[in-house]
Every structure is written in C-alpha cells, then in structure tokens.
Image (cartoon, rainbow, N blue to C red):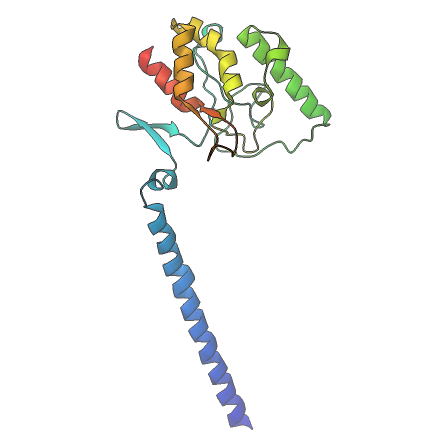
Length: 207
C-alpha cells in the first residue's frame, strides 16, 4: 500500500512538474516574445515605444500623452491648450504627467459642477468669448487626465488668440489646425480630434 502511494505521488508530481515547465516556457518566454515581435511590425513599432515625438533628434513629448503648455506671458499666450486634468492645481493648471486618472466625480457632484463653472469662466476670459461658446471638452477632464487631443471646436475657439500672439493670420492658423486634425476611424468610429502637441510644434516651427 505504501509503495503504491509513493508511486502515485511521484507520477502526479512528475506530471505537475511537466505542466509547470510547459506553462513557464509558453507564458514566460514564447508569449512575451510573440508580443514583442508583433510590436516590431511596421506601423506598430512607434506606438509600442510610447509614440515619442522627436524634433532634431531629441524627444519632445509623446503623441499619446497630453501635457498642457504653460505660456511665459499669460497675457500673450501663443499655445493651443489641452483639456483640463483632475490632477491640476486650479481650474486650468497643467496636469501632473506622473499621475493618470480622473476625479470620479459624477455630473451631479457639487465639486464637479463648481469645477466646470470655474473652467468655463477661465477659458472664456482667456479666449475673449462669452462662456456659452466654450465647448464641452474644454471644461470636462478626460478619464486619464492626460488626453493628448481636443475637439476641432475647442481648437477653433483658440485660433484668434493664437493668431494674435504669434502674428500669424487666422487663416494660416486654421490651416495648421486642419493639417493636424484626424478624422473618425474607418470613417464612423470616434470623433475628429486635434493633437495639441503636434499642432504646437508645427506652430513653433513657423513662429
């Protein structure tokens, strides 16, 4: 009886060890290598490395991470701005890129309502328009707080200010916005969007 128990134990242990070794190879070596190999395919390699945007051989940011620019002179602000972030200090302060997350505040939350009103007032003052003209994405923080894109409507709202600050014509600024606007995926998914980092870099190159 004892020898039978020992043989059963050894048989089962050997089977378990074989399963462990096979799964270790599959999940610890084969699968990671397969994922890495797919990420090297043309068209995917840049995104796999963080969608880093480079100028003159130097990284200047990521096309997938929105960090709101800060103007040296707020009264003469030449930059397009991102959506607000829950991690920002103040209504329109720049986000903390080391923190990703929303406020989790509901639409009926008094804090959320107060934040939206404060953002709308601040943006209306910055752009020189009435609060009713400020689009929704300009006053609502994204889920990550680091959304790299804004709506064409929010970009259009900022065109007159950017044109005045840079000395470019509004027509030329609108051309740059159009050049950095992406349409819906497959023509039906999502909404058109403007990448703020790439647009500001294009602005800086001709300023």
